[in-house]
Image 1 (cartoon, rainbow, N blue to C red):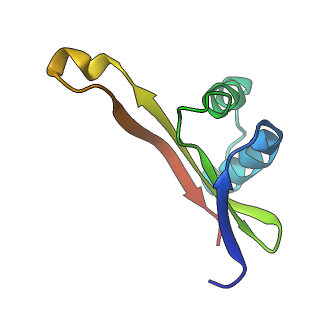
Image 2: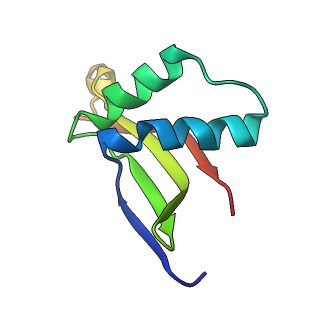
Length: 87
């Protein structure tokens, strides 16, 4: 794909991510969904990214770092919650 870039998700991207989610699932996103995206995007330790094509967001990945795996001997673990791509 030409003109595609990946960058960290910013809080101002949340509404556009909601639109992508609606297009893919064919159902309205809930305010809870947008709140979760805001929460994950607002923590720099999480790995949340958007894909842009020609300055337009065409995909996203929501990922968070989990610490409850410490009981199993892991310092931290990454969990990819959601990924969507329009094109």
